[in-house]
Length: 493
Image 1: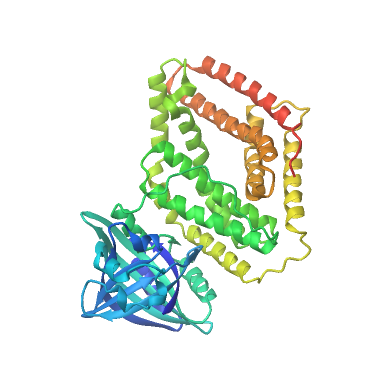
Image 2: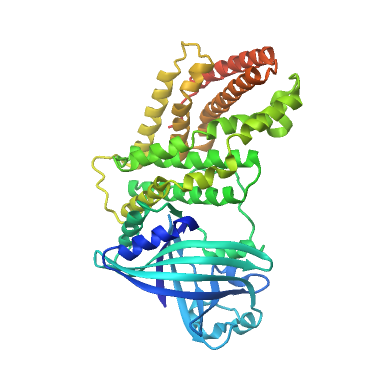
C-alpha cells in the first residue's frame, strides 16, 4: 500500500509554456519526461465501490497495465490524502481478488462484485513530470492535459499535481506558492474520478442550499475551532467555484457569487480574530474583494427580477423595466467573471496561503498567547460586533438610504461572526436575535436595487421616479421600525 499525499491545482492552457519553463529552471529540478496515460474507471451498475468511497481504475502506459484502488481518505483544502493499492495485470478488466482482503468490508463476495464491474468512464491524458528536491523533501510535479470521456460527453483535463514522494507535506505548499507567484492557479478539490462520475451521470450535482452554521469541535479547543472554520470556508469556496462553472442562470449565479464572497469574508474575518491576518494575506484579500465588487449590484438586480419580478408589481412599463435590468446584468459579463478572476495570480496565492495556515494550525505551530477558552472568546467577539453595530446605527438616530448602504459591510461582518460561532448557542434565542438583522441586510440590498433602478430610469427615461420614491419611503419606514426593535432584543451570548 502507498499513502498518496498530493496537492491538486487547476491551470489554464495558455499558461502551460510559462509553467514548464518555471519548473525546468527551478533549483534542484529534474525533468522526468512525458508519457501518455489511458485510464478506465470501473464500478458496478449500482456503484458499490463508489458507496464504499473507493475508486478503481486500470491504467495503461508504456505497454503495461496496472490496476489501482484508492480507499477512503481526506481532502483538507486542496491536499488529497488517500491510501492506494497498485497491482500489475495483463488485461484491461480489473480483478478485485488481486488486492489485499483487508481492504474490503466484511460479508461481501468480492468475486461476485468483480464479475459485475463495468467501465463507467475514461480519463486519457498526457503527463509531463518533474522531480524537485526542496527542504529535504522530494516532490513530484505532474502536468496533466487531456480529457475525461463518458459515452459521448467530454470534459477537458488541465491539472497540476504536487505529490509528496518523501519528506514533509509542507514542501507541497511551499513549492506551489512559489509557482503561483508567476502562474495563475486555483485549488482543485474535485478529482478526475469525481468529475468522471458526474460526467457519466452517476452522481448528482450539488445543489445550492442555505449553508448551515460551521460545525465546531465539542472540545472547546481554539486550535480545532480555527481549523474547522478554515477548512469549512475553503471547502465551500471550492464547492461554489465548481457550481459556478456549470450554472447558466443569472439568479442562481448571483446567489453563488454571494456565497463565494461570504466564504472569503468569513476566512478574512477569522484570520483577523486570531491575529493571523498579516502583510502577506491582507493585500490578497483586498485584491479579491476588489475583484468581487460586481457581486452586490448583481444581487440587487437579480433580487428585483426573481419570483417573476414581484418587487416590481404595479410599476409602469414593467416589461420594459425588466428588459433594462436584464441588459444591465448582461453588461456585467457575469459568464466571464470567474475565468477573469482565475487569471489573476493573487486568487490562487490566497487559496494556497489559506491551505498553508490550515496545515500549520492542525500541526499546532501557532502560538495562542493569552486567548480565553472558546466560550468566552466567542462571547467577546459577539459582544464587540454588536457594540460596533450599535454605534453605527444608534437607536436615537434616524437613518436614510445612504446611511444604510454605508453600514452594509459592517452588518455583513457582524452576521458572519454569529454564523461562525452560532452552533455554540441555543437555536431559538439565536435565531430570534439574528432574524431582524438579516432582514435589514436584505433591505439594504433592496435599497441598492432601487438606486440602480433610479440610474436606469434617468438613462432610459423610464419615468418611474414617483414609484421609486414611494417604494423607498415605505421600505425605509419598515427598516427603521425593524432596526429599533432589533436593538432591543436580548442578546443570546
